[in-house]
Length: 169
Image 1 (cartoon, rainbow, N blue to C red):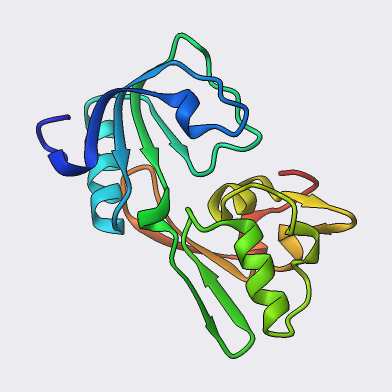
Image 2 (cartoon, helix red, strand yellow):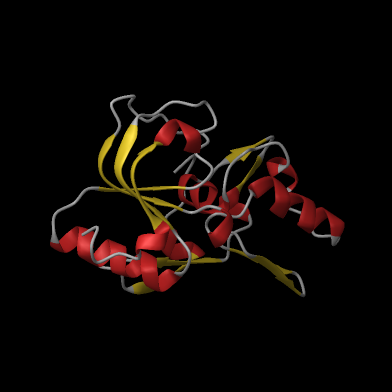
């Protein structure tokens, strides 16, 4: 698996406490810094083919990782996977984008709905996955669709109704 992934984006035995907000977590066998969808798709396909456990993380908020680490592949959606754009009244964000930054961008452009997120140190991907929320707001109220990858690395678009949001899920 390690030999087939881009070496410049791959690290061995990375300490995961450096990727969580509460600073817990031991070494990951392999850590891939997500740079584009094609690399993530390749990593998912290879991990599935070789039965390698995978863990995807963004800002690592609301995440506890064992101090013994993670034996498998960690895909980190960080700064290289954190693009945001605004087109009309639609915000689009990659998985690693800061939820707080999205909230500020919305407010700066007169958009409502993300006020609840201003103090949440999460990434957009994790926030959408967990339906994070606070103060009466939650992601299910602002997400229209999610572009993601299947476990096999195939692109999938899930509309809001297909996601099956419920409280904190």
